[in-house]
Amino acid sequence: MYLEHFGLTEPPFKITPVTEFFFSGANRGEILDALVYAITDGEGIVKISGEVGSGKTMLCRMLLDRLPSNIKAIYLANPSMSRDELLYAIADRLDLDLEGKRVNIILQTLQNHLEAMYERGERCVVLVDEAHAMPLETLEELRLLYNLQVGKHKLIQIVLFGQPELDEKLEQTNMRQLKDRIVHHFNILPISRKVINDYLMFRMRAAGYKGPDVFSPAAVQLIGKASLGLMRRVNILADKSLLAAFVENTHNIESRHVLAAIRDSEMTNKRNLLNRKGVAMTGGVILFAASLAGASLFMGQENTSLPAPTTMQTASIVQPAVASEVVATTVSQAAAAETLATATETPAAPAAAAPAAVEKAPIVIAPKPAAKPAATAAAPAPAPTTSVAQLPTMLQQRLAATQAMLDKPGRGNVSIQLFYTDDIRPERMERFLGRAQRLGILAEIYIVSIKLNGKDGYRVLFGNYATSDLARTGIQELPQRYKDAFAPTLHMLNETQNMP
Image 1 (spheres, one colour):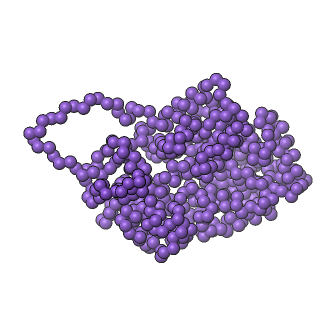
Image 2: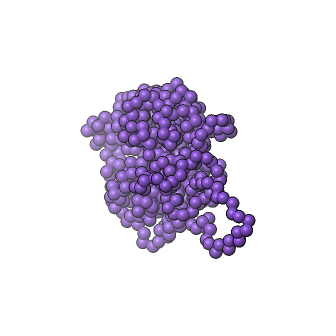
Image 3: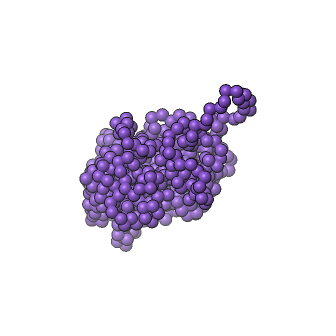
């Protein structure tokens, strides 16, 4: 929405990892160089830990691009898999057809293949993203795979990317053998406030911006304080701040725009940061004002009849379909990206309370209607209608459809896993499913309730296939945005039925 306003060719603060936006400052470049060296010239398991949103997945994607051609990298983006699923996933990435084979056959075939690679001067490395979510028995299987060797040379290397919970998991007594084999440790720290402006302007210029710095020192300080130096939070706040400035028709990002972005993002204590004078726009008002300014861009019409929101009066819920579509469509760039991308990494924390699993109707600021004359007769009571809360949500529909698919006789045994998440807030899944509906593929989306380290979560699948070959073809035919946002893998449905 604001790209032309700031002279940008693409959104600068997408939260989906894009290697062109890799920021080498704040030791990120040094860690990347050390990782490349550790994999190409060393041995041992490598571990990279960092908080949610610190840039682990981006670093992993950069590592994939930087590895030399003689190293075969196997990227596992969804580690919530069983021991057998891990072996099948690695075999699948090595183009080995081992479906239905016993574990000892799989291990022997893998060793033979890795030995042949070694003789050709090739190496294999397994990159595990979100390794803190991997079950203990699967982590132990990784250790056993690392033990494969020819002579004195290891045949496979392991790199674990995870949150600090990974360190806690490795402290367990039954994990000591794996921990002892970790020879390189890297910790991704939050970026300091001193380099946040460099980071912001690096992303702006990578997106085509050619003007002077747009973020004021006060705005940068607020972003640093609210984001705690975590890159994903910095991106979200910067994106919303640009949107707030666009609505005001200004090119300078001031503290009031960041304060509005903080309110809209709910990242910090609102009472401390927002109960001050001079906050022009907050929360949903940003999105509403943006929808008025940008409705013509999305609807293909001139926006001459919509009043400007000059004063904040009584908020009313607008139910007509057209009004709902205008507001629902004109969300900020960060919210649009979050619909597909946040599922690729485990979120910081689920909401403290997720009320009913129903997407709220959009709230629009509208002028308060004039009071009716006292003599006006009371309007007749409206006919009873079905409450919106009584209608099944898309999430409820897909959960029911998934169970029906699993219970169906003669169904296929393979599906495509798009992602898993322990953020079970219904509104997030509703946004994702809404995009799937607009793509015309909602009927192919299946959602399974699972447990992730004792927490409730969802496994999101696509399609139902009779064989693994058909499922692999299905991965190639996925919408491009799914292939860009996720790392689709095969998932055996026989184990899904037994999941909680």
